[in-house]
Image (tube, rainbow, N blue to C red; front, side, top):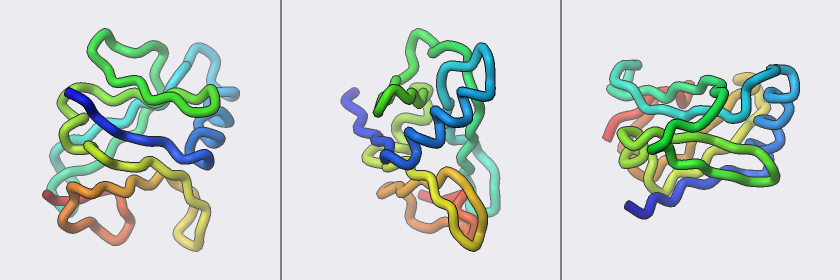
Length: 109
């Protein structure tokens, strides 16, 4: 499977900032789980090491990990970091999502 998921420069910078304060953690894990107000939701957690079957996305020394189950939901997605009136957060521009909630953390296909 050739999965194209990208990190923006802002997301990579923020991942590096977070990891600098978290000894033993080496990457941001991004997963898609059932739930949320739109059917699926994004989950962001820090990881020590990638699993053997993870997709590893690298940019500017920052690493994001995506498990095989989540890869299909995130095909073609761009992971960004925004700081706006809603607050600071990672946001995913997902071409597979047909709708999403106002906060951007859940979506439907």
